[in-house]
Image (tube, rainbow, N blue to C red):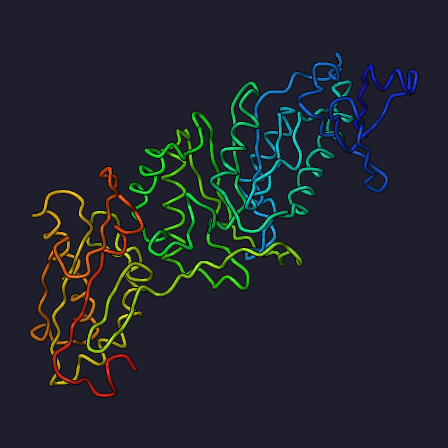
Length: 415
């Protein structure tokens, strides 16, 4: 057990030494039993009174953000996240555990303690602290509807800001936030250029202050019903977006833990609005429109984020185009970013990239014509606000390639 001495406890219980698994909250002791053993996480607000000569001065800060909401698997500590936890335990760091629901809150916070009277006792104390962190992560539950990872990052950074030494924030969350200013239910937002989105949030002063913090994300794109499964291109987009946000917020290091979150979600949680993902392909009459999703391009390039996914998506279109009487015009468009000639060049390159996929799938090259119109096209969505600031979601909707067929494909284009 972890043994603490506190003047307030002495006044109530004489010279009794009290073991807790809970915390000091403004002088009140909370006690919870864990079978035959007990562990302690002591609130930082009480540490000046609670620290004894036998307790080493803690260094470092660790904030663990747990999604804990519906539409995603239950969190579990693994990989890089486990390594961050172990570092915190070994240095008796300040630790905060938070939940990223619609109104992020601190579930537990304080400095870990382990007696240093001998190595065996210290090791046992630290193992109990490790178990406590894992248990709190596993049992974290949302209290309110929706999910707000951006707000949770801000709260996490502030919670450990005064801890001496290095700070690490780990986020065990799907990343599909549904609260403004980062609401992925907004059409086009998930397909936004990551740098543009992060810059937009920074200009609006909506970013957390992560200066000097290391950030680890685990579970980005890991979902549970009713949220539809996130495909690889969308997961890449989520990773790129959150990485860009953390770096723009000042993080010194950003890492992704590849181990997926797979635990069965907790039942009875407040609802979270599902994010519509789509494939990036829509069809109307003789026109197919490709926008983001499985046919997303890397920023400022004509390189697909996932060429295999893009090829699989346009394969049915390629089969239709193999009809001897059908030709197609591919037109690329862009957001109103940068010089007009550059916009036209990039949009044409993307149209040609889609044409190349179709040719690889058996469409004769002489039946395809490619153009680029930049941001000058019918249906352009205004992508700047009244102050001239870019609107990332609108910009994403303007970045597309349309395929317009001439002739009648067998079976109908949209069948």
